[in-house]
Image (cartoon, rainbow, N blue to C red; front, top):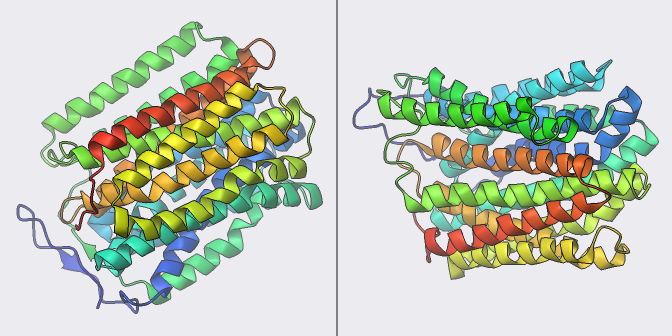
Length: 471
């Protein structure tokens, strides 16, 4: 039978939805959940190759290309907390399926976009769908596989699916753009979304609901505003300059929105983040680590994509092939770390992964922007492998520290931080390319990513448990 979450001691008795067909020994729930996660991650990586082509076709600048990428990511980051809260309140499977529908329909909207503003708007809606999918994906795996060893393997395969999607994205994007046009990078989501919805409804057990749990809308809006303002300030810095009043105002407003969120959480009767959640060193530390490694990895992929196509003159397909060494390593690293975590615990995996990623990004920065491509292969492989190797341990750390009845909120917090890291990495990388003299922006961006990964390694040594936690 499927694992269900206990009700909170201080809340009303939760009501359960009827049981489904999935079980802890069945692989069907894993396949269903991973199909949705695959679609979300594929959309992150496939757009990096297609974005410069879209920019040329729709006549937009580097800043416009950043918005096509970050419109999705900031909505994803801004509404993840809402998605997690809705999952805990209405049932994770129900919200997961709603997210798949929103994501699939908005992907069709992206494919028919007549101009850049329409495409950015559709990408924002797509990001909202992704924000409903991802918190539920981890919560549904936690529900379907209550045995810690089985769950560790499931989390490892979940991370490996991200690696497969990340690996397929650049090459698939290059092939689709070259053979059929950029609109097909969005149309590819339609059959995946339909398959995911069918599998989930047939094989994933419905989740326990907590209908008495309120949604803290002021806090949710503050999170969304923080992500949007920070991303906007970094994006516009490339066009306006780092000292432009609008850029500085956006950064200050982002800080104010973050402060408003903290204040609201202190005053709310039923806060979006339970009071003790962030006091957990493992959970809060794992969350910051997620932000840092996404900043480094996705900042690298976006910056390299733009540089390869705009400065080196590669086609979309050639760019996808050039990035393949970085993203191909992710699928192997996630599966390997999922197996090793049962023997070593999570701390060695996260620390070693982040150190390797830092070494790779620092190696690219040291090689310089004009280095011949073969010199970049090893740094790319190190960055891709190290980041993904750390992902499984960081995920297990956060979910293992989640309080009873709050897996959706913990998952949402972790993935909100990760997507904020992605958005800021892309925004900073694009702005550095647009404002730095000559090709120096690439080197600065890679150095910033290396520093973020090195910081994550130090944080993991202090915050990630030495042995695997059993929730």
